[in-house]
Image (cartoon, rainbow, N blue to C red; front, side, top):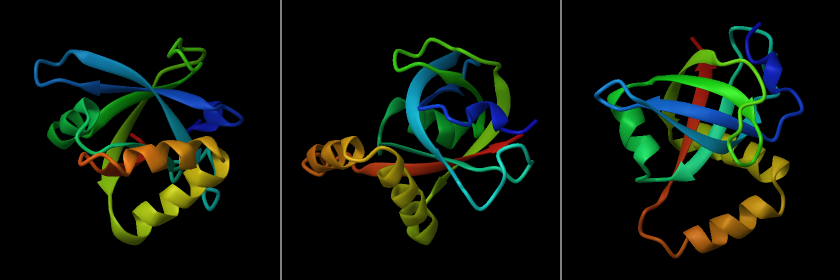
Length: 130
């Protein structure tokens, strides 16, 4: 099934895990990679966040995550799927940022402008089916 449940969705709930094993759910913007089919095991979803957010710290400790489609408030509206996440840099991060900028124009650019005043930086991640 892959990530076909995310077709046409605006938000996904990203559940990351603390060292204790407790899950933390966060609604996030995402953009699928059009070069792979959402229903395949090669599917990729790009996510953008503030660089030193709690979810980034948890991902560095444990790349295992769960994802589900949700509304803007984080209310889950679909099935949870096991996945793995990786923080990306360079060309791949630029590619993911372009996809996110296109999907969420102009809101992503406005948020990026205000985030540019922060020392926290920005992080791009790619989520793949487990």
